[in-house]
Length: 165
Image (cartoon, rainbow, N blue to C red):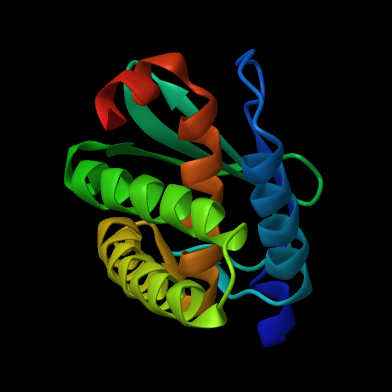
């Protein structure tokens, strides 16, 4: 069994929400490309993948459904969004600041905002790794990309938009 088998080969988000934002769509697409190119994803007690992951919201919670490459269910994990709420609000604000600053001259402001964004991203990745640790082991880069996908999923959800205001 090689380490390469403990990876994601497919990632899908519930895209049933009507709200679309081109910037969020771009971040989602880049996160999926980066995630599929390089990730570590090890469901606890499973013999190996690769794996398919579907991320959705169910009854106000985040649901991560993991299947093997053949579609056989491996594990589902439901996470409360409450521990992530502050980080998601902060991340939303810093992303908006970043997009606003892109139209202004001078790279200094963008660099400062991007540093803040990376800090929030790292904190959220650590929290995600901790919250998933009983079901799935992931590395920090995988957790960062998964957080981006969680942000993209929730940014589409009108209910979440109300929470982030």
